[in-house]
Amino acid sequence: MKKRTWLSMLLVLVLMFSLLAGCGSPAEEPAETGEPSEEPAEPSEEDVVITVAAGAVGQELELTQMAAQMYMDDNPGVVVEVLDTPDLAQDRLGLYLQFFEAQSSEVDVYQIDVIWPGDLEEHFVDLYEYGAEAVVGEHFPAIVENNTVDGRLVAIPWFTDAGLLYYRTDLLEKYDLDPPETWEELAQQAQVIQQGERDEGNQDFVGFVWQGDAYEGLTCNALEWIASNEGGTIISPEGIITINNENAVEMIDMAATWVGTISPEGVTGMAEEDARAIWQGGNAAFMRNWPYAYSLGQEDDSAVKDRFDVSPLPAGANGEPAATLGGWQLAVSRYSENPEIAADVALFMASYDMQKMRAVDGSLNPTIMDLYEDDDVLEAAPFFGSLYDVFTNAVARPSTASAPNYNAVSTAFFRAVHDVLNGNLDAATAFEELELDLQDITGFDIE
Image (cartoon, rainbow, N blue to C red; front, side, top):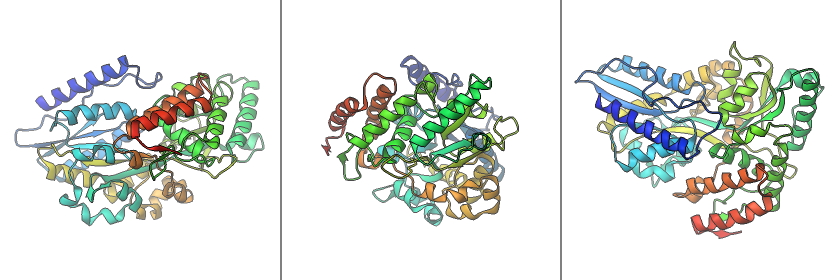
């Protein structure tokens, strides 16, 4: 079909440009062709084809395809195709911008990051005009507010996220340790366990894995370090640049000492799946990652099955634990030729039953509040209940304050942090330069 050919060609071109420009994690597998992962039967001329651009981290793509099939089972005459898009947020955003620039109708529903509604709202319909009013009260109010721009609901919440600490329960017991409450304690424990396991013959074992590549994931990790040490959130909600402060500098300099000690040198090239591969292979004591990694770690082929647990991330010396707010939404393109049906697909995929399926099968945090009291959900992911406060009080990135320039703000931030982690600059120098760059990008005052 023309639609599928056009999508495939564009995605291949975008991914080729991304690879040539050096974007993405060095440890990532090459991206697929951009075709939907499972080739569906050719739609008839009478069918309405709705294309959903979705992610594939962990079990996301499989779960989205399952929801698409369930929708089609109940809606003859509608074919829902799922387009596999790049894992890294900035690569996916680059692809989306290509569609938007062309005002293309080729994609009907977009999976968008929690940080994008303010920057991309002009390209999406108001879901209040397509039935969302009846269900929006089921979702976390803060996420609904995040997705609302000038009174328009530009995306329906799909799943939420917050950074968590994964730890090996068997190894903490072996070395007579309790889960760390501060980053300093984590570093000390990681060193003890790493040395002990290497002394016993596992030279591949490391203390701590996380997301250190120069991409949005590093913004999330670094914001957690800084916010947990009372170092602010890069830019305040009032639009003041706050990043260049002593507490922020202290935490980034500390994180730089982990590289090559408790964390592998290659951690500065790792994204979520790279860290998970090491952790799930049994070769790390601690991991920072999102909730999706829980169900995968409990699969039969996992070396850490029944040997790990999760907790809030540690705190800095001057603050309390902080977890970056993550999560994804479903937005309907204003360029869709079938916005009513596209909106119906989006609302179906974000419904109670579909969010429950994703929570049980993929440990993807629901945005529907009642699911946190659902017995099946809590049996599959018990930490959803015990860490509920982590998810509801997560720290937001400054996407609203800096819209429509958040992508440029985050890029400047993670590049500055990456320079420190790689030993090119100390944090004080990097943040002195960063605050000037942020002032140029936003026009905001410096604290």
